[in-house]
Image (cartoon, rainbow, N blue to C red):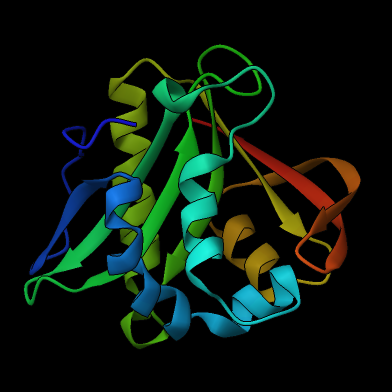
Length: 174
């Protein structure tokens, strides 16, 4: 993970900050604000180990050098969003979005964040983005489809925390 890597964002009053595991405690408030999603994902509210896990988990064949965790920082310094992703996964020139969390009070910023992130990925030579949505997460599925993603396959079951999920893998070209 590289704390110095960021990308430009068109949202006035916000900036992107590269995060590392040392920032896990700063993210705890965001995870608590998004606890409905964390409970859907894991079956229990967030705790420090859940936040740290985002920095410690990697897809098969990937390492910390391929993992990027970006924080969306408000002018107040508070982290109001985060985007965790993996470079060159599942194949070269493709990026995997592992998690997007946006504080519910910041509705409307996710679309701009994603658009700016996709523009940055193109500038880095990426040509595709993939992600997985839990089969029961209809709001998440609608959001990603509105961003141009289409279903490519199903996966699972995947056990996360105390929950088992079927996954819809989505992709979009850049």
